[in-house]
Image 1 (cartoon, one colour):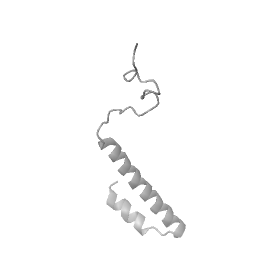
Image 2 (cartoon, rainbow, N blue to C red; image 1 turned 90 degrees about the vertical axis):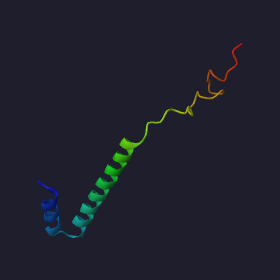
Image 3 (spheres, one colour; image 1 turned 180 degrees about the vertical axis):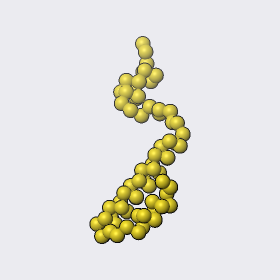
Image 4 (cartoon, rainbow, N blue to C red; image 1 turned 180 degrees about the horizontal axis):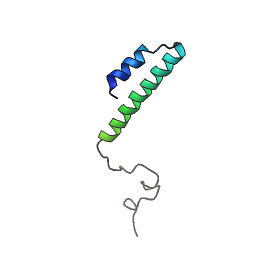
Length: 68
């Protein structure tokens, strides 16, 4: 079923305030979720910068330690 008949059916449906708010909330959630998913998929791959525990001299990084 295409989108236009579904939209017309939804707009012609009799609903009270609670049903209207439910439909709006579902629509906003779907749109924001789809936008977030698209941003996640289109984001460029980033390499790890090394900002976690163990990536500093105090945490035990081997590149900053003096061996000897």
